Amino acid sequence: MDWDNLKVALAISRLGSLTQAAYALGIDQSTAGRRLSALEADLGAILFVRSKTGFALTDAGQAAIKEAVEVERRVDQLVDAVTNSDEGPSGVVRLLGNGWMLDRLARTVMAPFMVSHPKLDLRIITHVPRSRVRGEASLSLWFEVEPRDGEFAIKLGDVPYALYYARESNLEKLGWVSFYDEDALRPAITRSYRRLKRRHESLRLTATDAGIMLAAVREGVGKGLLPMCLAEEDERLVRVNDGDPELIRGLHLHAHPDTVQALRVQATIQWLRETFSEVFLPPG
Amino acid sequence: MDWDNLKVALAISRLGSLTQAAYALGIDQSTAGRRLSALEADLGAILFVRSKTGFALTDAGQAAIKEAVEVERRVDQLVDAVTNSDEGPSGVVRLLGNGWMLDRLARTVMAPFMVSHPKLDLRIITHVPRSRVRGEASLSLWFEVEPRDGEFAIKLGDVPYALYYARESNLEKLGWVSFYDEDALRPAITRSYRRLKRRHESLRLTATDAGIMLAAVREGVGKGLLPMCLAEEDERLVRVNDGDPELIRGLHLHAHPDTVQALRVQATIQWLRETFSEVFLPPG
DNA sequence: CAAGGAACATGCAATTTTGCATGAAGAAGG
DNA sequence: CCTTCTTCATGCAAAATTGCATGTTCCTTG
Image (cartoon, rainbow over all chains, first blue to last red; front, side):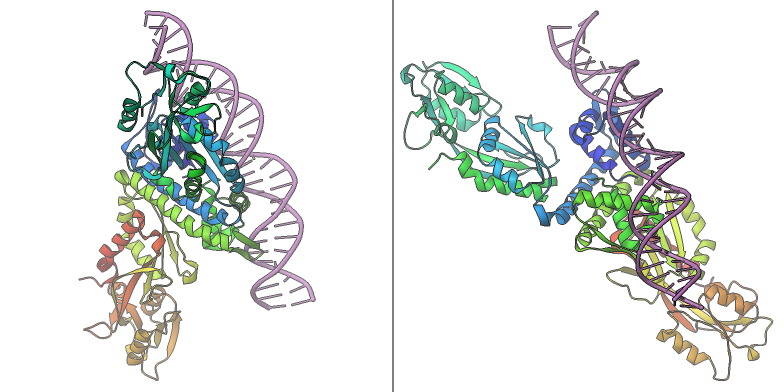
């Protein structure tokens, strides 16, 4: 049995299809299929039921994947133990989250991090359906979402939002630009909006990303709740009220327990914790 | 990094040389060398220092092997978990011990065991220097030897020895056939001999294996302490004294902790425990 | 219901890996 | 001190693996 073929089984189990698994591994779909077949032949058991819509785990497959995850973790440990000393952790880390958050990270603290970790391979993925993320060294940035099926979560900090409008606009006439996505119905958010928004005011635009909202508000489309870290930097935006932020959202980092222990994941977590204030709090 | 290359590193670390490792893995020495080089390149660290006398672990190599052993164990678990259900455990188990013991096992209880475990691959190795045996799913049968460096040992039972001579010989005129090997100087054995052997009696032959001793005694070369399980079955041998055996040796089974957990090793241990009386005690 | 898309299987050529043969370099033994 | 044995490195042909192109089946969507 070729130990390397376990990678294929793991990838298929995570991505659900041969094609995607092969792409993730950087090999051809046909190769992935043949290597899986070879693995199954060596083990004397069928691990996946093939269908045109994808691969699904059999009972034997579930048992195998459960152990293969452990194998992967040990290999990670080995790589960490050996390559560690010279140039810091190496390998792939996937970072998932909202577009504006990842964009902000990229604009502020990402470059020095990549420089100081030359062997780290960061995959930035915006707005992936949460269900798709399983295992495989990935970290997700989410607001107030409790971890799913045994995910490991730490709170990075509180991100303040405040109400802004464009300097050139007439505040009284402005409609609203508001957030809409799976999180939009959370109590904290609806409560803030209910408190701020008067009945007769119109809703001009919704967006799933605060970066787009900010652009819209800046161009005078309407007023809206924006992360202070973004808005305070923009000279064309004016905050409506002084004092406390209108809304505070807790930012959490979710990690799959299979891979939290890997050094590269730990390093990324540490980086996000250390730079949180700089990235997500308003300056000063 | 090709996970399968860890096998090569493990084999080299256990057998100490590229050639032997390659032979054990069933691949060519040049292939093993190239795969080790590839592994080292992927890890960015040298694992072994090459010399004409063999390969020696570097510090990085030691760290790597420590983890690779864990990887191997998890792969074992995976194979056990998956192939388990149908035809019992599979894989290689090495069984080391004295020639006569392994010979006796082969004559008595080995065939049914091999039949009931069709996927098991048993490697019988007689009289290997003990230092050579490290890791790699091996079990050793030894008398009264305490386990080394964290080996795991269980006592199988007591093997009775008694004094025999050939039916056609004249007991009074017979010299001695005695055991000689690394274990021969153990207190229990020298005590028995001192008690039994009179000064004027001559020492005719020494052998390192009780099977050869038995053949010699049977052919009238001399009298000697023989395992009762062997001697009682031989019509041409006569026991000198009735009653208690002249010598009792405790038979132990040593296993390396890295691999005891593997199902195939467990199955082999269980087999040896269950059949001990039939194999190593005199009939009746 | 038809068309388009996505997913897995398979034949075949190109690439990679492997094994063999040989060479070189040290260790062991007479 | 020389011979012999064992060990690892390397060039080259054979073998195995891989990727590409294509075919087929099923799901989705208009």
